[in-house]
Image 1 (tube, helix red, strand yellow):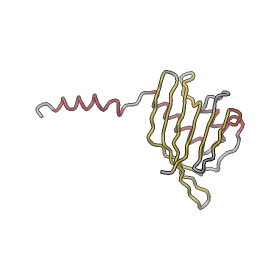
Image 2 (cartoon, one colour):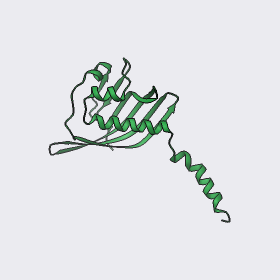
Image 3 (cartoon, rainbow, N blue to C red):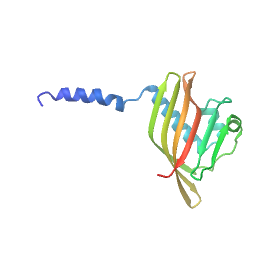
Image 4 (spheres, rainbow, N blue to C red):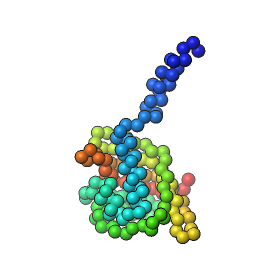
Length: 151
């Protein structure tokens, strides 16, 4: 090829959307990761007060492999003082996809939890869908649903 700079320009034009993230997307990822870390060491009430919009429409839903499901509605989110045992879980998040539309956003991602209970170790795989809203310049979670699955 006589002019390799043309190839580099084409690569830059094609790859920029693949590799760049907006400030909003970066902020949303930080909120999701911080909320997950806090979920491992604080009560649900403390976590939601920091990272969530809390109103009568706030909800956190979980479905398990055995078909059981539960919902934490507004009253549950603001009243749960149960704190998980320290250092009982580690989370790895992957396949994050963020879609921002003005002050609203959705985030989907896969999460693998390593849960340690004494000598027992359990691995949980979850697909998470989160709806967020930007309030006073900060992204907050308004709804989350987590579906456990077997890889």
